[in-house]
Length: 266
Image (tube, rainbow, N blue to C red; front, side, top):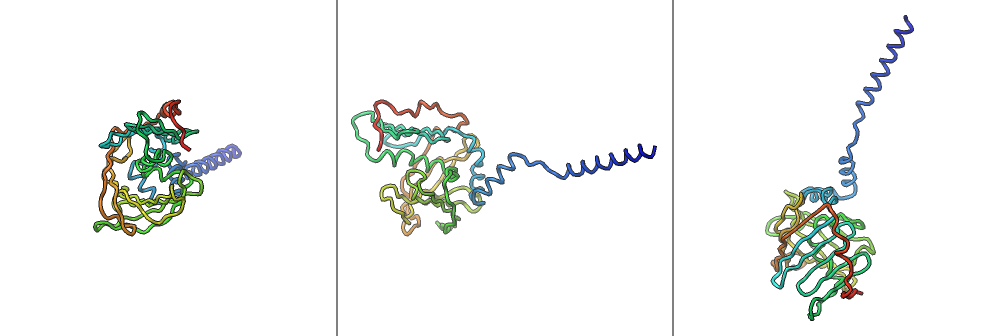
C-alpha cells in the first residue's frame, strides 16, 4: 500500500512539474517571428514608416501592381510583377517593357522615343512604390540630416546600394518622414546613371497625397521640387495616379514578353 501511495505521489509531482514547465514556455507566433526579423533587418524608424503605410508584410503578400499616371500628352499605364520586377509601361506613342532577358522598346507610330529605355523603364515605378521598395535586397541604411521645410523638421533615413545592385547602384536616396505620423513626405535622390559617378546633389519629390488600395497607402499625388544646396525651394510639376490595383495574384507572364516588332535596348 505504501509503495502504491508513493507511486501516485511521485507521478503527481512530476505531472505538476511538467505542466508548470510547459505553461512557462509561450509559443512564438509566426507573425511575431516575422516582426522580430523585420526589426532586426531594418532601422526602427523605417519599420514604423512601413507600418504607417499598411505594413511590409502586407506589401510582401502582393504580387502585382498596376497604376495610370495622368499626363496632358496622354496617360501612361504601368503594370509590374512585384516579385521579379518584370514591367510594361504603355505610353500613347511607345511601349517599354522589361523581362528576365530584355529591356525592350516598341514604337507604335513614326515618332522616335526620346531618351534611354534602360533609364526610363522603371524610373516612375521606384518613385511610385515608395516606401516599400526601400526594403529591397542589397540596400545599406544609414543616418541622414533632417530636412526642415516651412517650419517642419522631417527626420531622414539614408539609403544606398551595394555595388552591382540595379541599373544605378551609385544612386543614393533619403526618405524623410512626418515626425508625428511616420508617413513618408519627402524623397531626396541623386542621379548617377549617365555620369556613372557618385553625386551629393539631391533632387526632391514631395508625396502630397496617399490612397488606400488593398490595405496599403500608396501614392495618389507627388510633386517635383527645385532645390538649392540640397534643400527644396519651389514646387514644380505634379504627378497624379489613378486606376491603382494591388493584387496577391501574379500578372500573366505573357504581358512582359518581348514583342516581335520591338527593339531590344542595349
